[in-house]
Length: 222
Image (cartoon, rainbow, N blue to C red; front, side):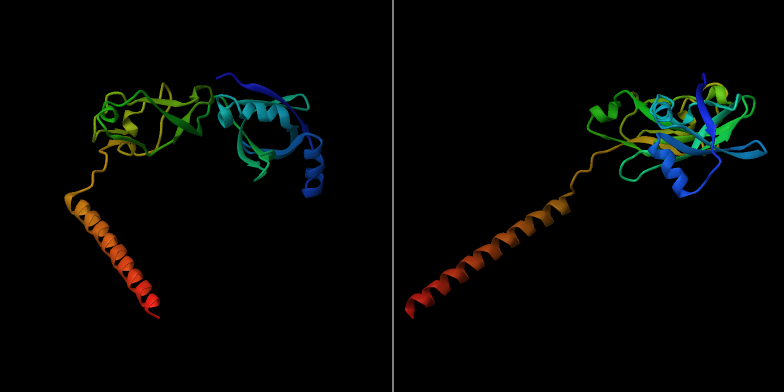
């Protein structure tokens, strides 16, 4: 995975007021930390960072920050957005090395139509993101799982997910990722209860109608 360059500037001030001024100027307050190096306070262009995070790799995009002439390889973590407007409020960048594995959350996509679904079953996906470990250059964009051969009652486990070369996960192998469940069919007892309930409602309606008619008759007599 190729990294994307993002120009950053150091920021001397911290606090809500200086951060607010930066945001109004189209910049995102951020920090860079990790690898035993002092934390660095920076700002990055909001528009440029927004385009990066909206890309195919999202938060797993390798970002090379240019700070005062130095290039710092990072991943964006702890991305804070405004709760209603969705604009970027603050980002933590973690320093990484190309020769050291990192952890990342990768989306899991189901591919194909399961045989069991065509037979009336229901596809249930239980895991939508999988935590993996890989060298920065081996982080996959997504994990695709072919479910075409699944019949009703079949399951896909973590061990069945093709992770790719140099990619590993600490999630238990037998964890269920997706399954085809049988469509729920009402039992005879449930159907009987439903019929009895309907009959009870009809009886109550008729009784109410009779009572209403009796009441009308009494009124006429007066």
